[in-house]
Image (cartoon, rainbow, N blue to C red; front, top):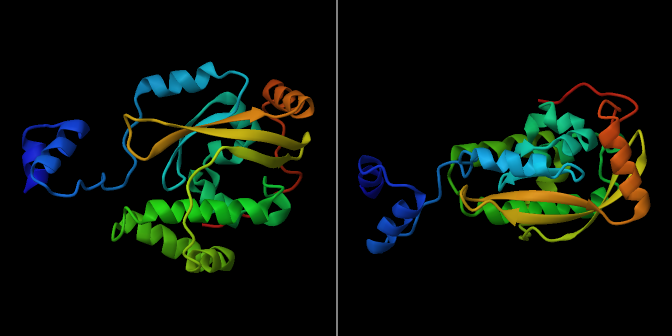
Length: 218
């Protein structure tokens, strides 16, 4: 009933949440947790001309990105692996994975995803995603069954790119407050060698990220 009232009154997200609080009813999250991004968000991404950056929702779908991000991870921007970092992390073969420390990063991603999943229990988009990835990846299914919970953190990640080798990047996440459960991830090189390699990739955006290909898994 409250949802119907909110729609009739054309309440925005803040007004909708206030209505639910006045009624002493838990505020339901948006159905899919992935609202539309304001145009200014892309302008901010594009303004980070020398740093890879993207906007990711709580299901690890990549919603927007800038040119340096495309240079570093062309497959995601091209729409491979559903533009979802979790799907790409488990479904891209280890030989072509961008993660050097894959065994550390994937459990952290699953734990962070698990925390978000708890806010979307019963939502088809989330349950279907988990079912599909569990069926496609025994590694994901095993980590999912562990029920570990985590949150996004600022830390150094080590990536691999076929054209330049290893790149060490510090990842900082900023909430995009106008779109619930969405964050902007900005990747900053942590040493001179990584800075030089990112700069080279930005100058050579067509450089292949892997030296061979595999058939996509759907």
